[in-house]
Amino acid sequence: MKKLLATVITLALALTAFTATVSAAPSPEKEQGTVTVATAKDADNNDVSIKLESATGSTVAFDSMIADLQKENKDLKVTDHKIISAENNSAVKFPVTVEFKVPGVKDNTKAVMLLKKADGTVVKIEATVLNGVVKGVFAEFGEIVLLTDVAASEATGTSPKTGDTSTPIALAVLALSVGAAVVSVKKIKA
Image (cartoon, rainbow, N blue to C red; front, side, top):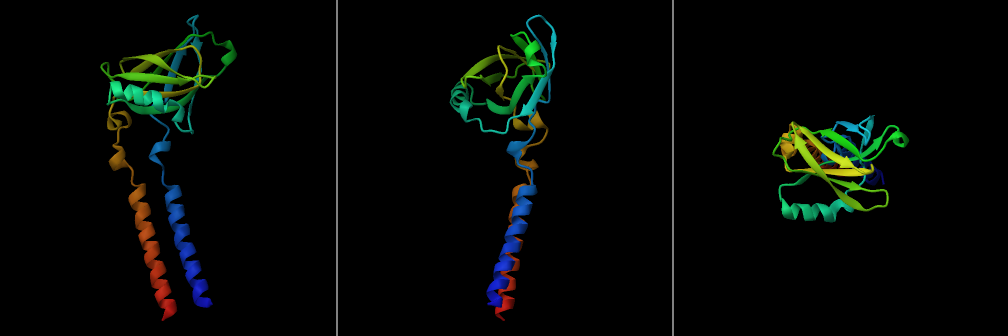
């Protein structure tokens, strides 16, 4: 009975160590995104204070439209997924022209914005790119997806393939934990 209890405790500790390592590692899909600054003017050319939040949900509502856009341009990738709103929404007179500062975009970059409206429909917002800024005109605010044909390494400054070390570290911890559990079991049996 003591041997079985020791085995169970050892395996539980190994699993706990593995879970702690994996949950502590940042997920590349949940980063803050590349758009950090947005400025805007409303229909009367008044400044609008914009609030950008990282969208935590999936892009399922956008997927069919993204697939259609990628048929036209296979290099288009989701660059960011945000929720855009105005600090004081009641004072905003639409349409609002919003300029997003996006690292890596150049004048020849293709950019498209998709907006999920309040009624759940997704519409395409025509975007223009100039001097590292992506500009679009919004009839309302909500959840947006920004697609560009900028390589991920240009947009974020690091390659997602070489910058993400969480998977190898998690696998190493798992291997060490399993090894420790096996050694403990062998010692208990001896």
